[in-house]
Image (cartoon, rainbow, N blue to C red):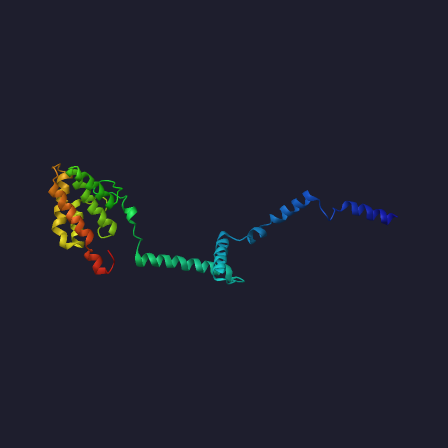
Length: 225
């Protein structure tokens, strides 16, 4: 009886082997706070590599096992980056589109209209005998059209005469007419000289001529106009 009583008291002093809900949660928190668990957690790089590996597995229908899975993702990412860098080195920065170029400054003014829109507005002013506005807009249409085609560039601050010289290199057959058009634009826009129908017709004629021609520089490089 003495032995039985001692065993009973010993059993009562030992914590139960099956904890209740709160006790189990505390035990789990203490266990997971061990630094060994934190060290075993995957790093952000591991997660990225695993995601890339899973993408290529789904793409090619292959299963990468063992330690090659994460490493394959890293290698694939490096290869993609190298291909992109090589593309930039070979082909350069992608050219902006005509719509993006149409929002750039043009001879000191932020001009949003396309070449076609400028030509329509110039013709509208010409039909009313408003030669000053018609001349300015048609010359802007001439410049915008060549920019949209990639034949000539008009960086911010470029003058009409600098544009005319650049355009003459691409269209040498129209060099004189381009310079005359630039002078007419200068006279009307900056010197406030009255425009005439003759000047408007000359600018419209050179605009039509270069629009129908292929730039010499592009012909030499084999690129389409």
